[in-house]
View 1: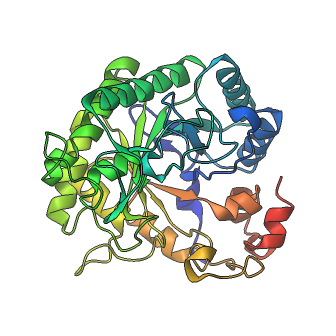
View 2: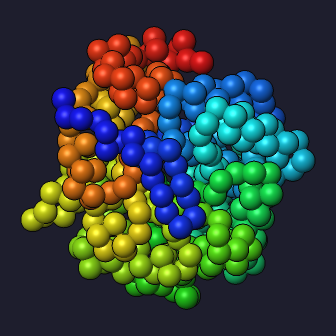
Length: 369
């Protein structure tokens, strides 16, 4: 195996400094009864910090909009009790030597009516579409758009106030912001729909609002993806030129770091180059970029192939990741399921203990702590 030294070099930027290049990827857990991050949640994140990761990006946290949530028992990032819970998480992670940011989330038309906190709220989306040809919920008015931007902005301000080290805006995977970016779900004819530039307007205004509210020194990460949970083959940008347009619009609006979500980080994004989505994003934007997608495992999502949960994704070598980071294709690597089932993954990698890593299995998840 190649030397892992590159993964454990400090990351230094104008707004965010980390002890190494490993990031814990955001993963929804539904372990927050009443939408409050409790002591068990704090312990879960502390153990990952103790495991050696440099930065933790929390599971998606719902902003204060009535249609933001789509899943039971996910944490909110508004209200006195929820913010107090997150402050406890932040303190625990900092004590364990890592930094932490929340992922701010609105699910858009993925929502089904009847999910709390506001069970009567409909799903909100650009055009009332869950995916091309399938309706769900309502198309957003200008007031709805203003309300959502205000909710993200307040969440960012609150995150800054209680001690988080930055924020991540969830603009990926077919959720609300991505629904504006994706022409398959954005059929608007106003300033928010049409060309890629117009479809990006909602995200641009949201980032600009957050940036103005938190000031210039607070880090903003933006997570985006080509694929959607509604369509694994979807593309926001079909060419490097289109990708350049998108990421530079967002960078100009105030994004400091991009989090380029793929299902398998080793796959090239465009023909004629081995660069993945993160590599292209960093090359085109000049901004530090996080890669993610089955790092440390040999397969992507189990449900992709309809596999039984007793089957597993096995531990995989990380030579490809190391080589790409040595080539400065991207600056940071987010690890999801591998850290989910083995909190000590970074420390074990650093100490050459790959043989002791746990595979991603049903049994491992059942014993998750």
